[in-house]
Image (cartoon, rainbow over all chains, first blue to last red; front, side, top):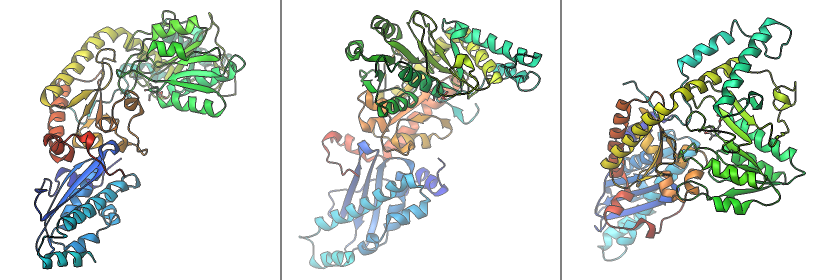
Length: 142
Length: 404
Ligand SMILES: Cc1ncc(COP(=O)(O)O)c(C=O)c1O
């Protein structure tokens, strides 16, 4: 199977590959997939006090399309608010990377990882954070 | 060095130029139909086929009349299993095979099951070799056929054909082997191994694609087969269809060359394969060998690289042609049935790569590939959340993963 140029580009030059401190309260971490299924994605978001995603990092165990999907997701969410990030759909990733049908699950996984990271952030910051931040974060979700 | 590097010799092989030369006249000047009994064109073709049949038979210790030409090992396996099942239906309805067989055996067996036969799929030991006691225990008075491959296409593991043959003979059960990966690479002798049916094919041994053979024993016992194809009654009625004369000539030349060079080639490939393995393993930790370390084809190495997915590894080394047992390379989401049968965990099956070395593999290529594997795995592990977690001391087996 031939890969699209964009998949190859993300695979060879992954954007935002790495890790953030998962104990940092401003960092949401999402880990989805399972080794037995051949793909695991970790996506981390550092979210500022105004609910804007300041930084994003990923690490992925999986095929080239899985790596590209997560790389693309981190690229897209940077600078977005939580609410905007929530709007990203796996189909957007499929279209951007021209993924064939057998690779659609890679994009689903990237969307799931993103949602999981946002959920983790919101859970971490549900109480104990300044109310305004928390409110903003929640607003973003709606 | 020429790129891309071919290291997938268990999938297929390039045709040797000496084989091509032998075939060429039979496409043009000597184009006759081997079944044309009344003119020189036919005689010439028949003569070439007879000579080829002799070569193939001798290669496995058989007689020329016992060779049936087919379109390849897939057809040979189908003919052996379906042909025996139909012809011996009054004697019994039970077939024994192995979980690690090629799909052309497994899917044929599955069809027989749907048609009312009973099939036992033997497990293998963690090294890929069957347990002879388990085989003995599986035989019933309904068993008509045992089908066990000579050497596995994914992990190269060689089955103990002589011992299996002895058991089959003692119990009066026919014995078929898919020797597609074996002929020309390891000794195959139909009498010493009590083989009744043997499948093989030209394109795995530097011959053309689309030509194969089935050895069918003619005496002690005389094996009878129901044909798959009806027609002109060629090949003693077992395989109708005009013979592929150039293919047959090429097949024989390929077998001749493989046998003449077998021992030297075995030594050379074993040395190159071991070198590849050692160089990779000294550069990386958490690399696992799949299949028995010695009882395997000299040109086969199958490794799992923990924390790295196979398809991404092949993508990272796209100037090298390799295969992976990862499911990502297939439409099904299951990784290699062969590795799972060995008891390899799903994640390591997804992380497997098959290195197939052959006649045109050079020392320089092996060195290049070994270095490339080490750097590719290192880069992908840096990208792998599993590697990171393992380094932090997290036992990946205890993590609750979100299945999807
Ligand atoms: C073990 C084994 N059996 C059967 C086959 C099928 O052979 P062919 O391509 O000649 O049909 C192959 C090759 O793909 C093989 O490796």
